[in-house]
Amino acid sequence: MEKTKKVPTNTITRDIKYLAEPTGNIYETTVILYKRANQIALAEKKELTKKLEDFKTDHESMTEVFENKEQIEISKYYERQPKPDLVAISEFENGELFYRRAQQDEAEEN
Image (cartoon, rainbow, N blue to C red):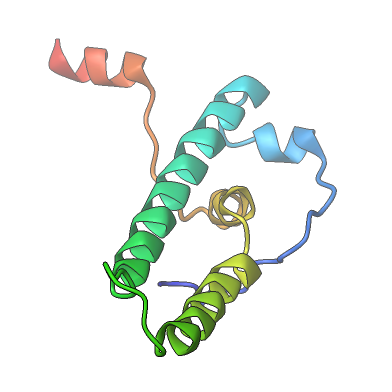
């Protein structure tokens, strides 16, 4: 997981005027942030599911208790990560997000 950036793990109060400056519209900004946060959440979920699949067994055994501890540690790691919406906002504020408007796409095609 690429979490080397300094992203806060708790909510920060932000002035929406400054957040909306790059797009000129708070609603556009909200949609951009929603879409990026959704991408991040889906990627994290896929990664977590892949890691937890290693622990699937069809039968119970004595090692299951040990495996459950490892599963818990993996789950705790992901719980401590910054939430996808905070990562998306941080990327947006730092100019790391690429986005384009549908109107721009239509104008480029014509």
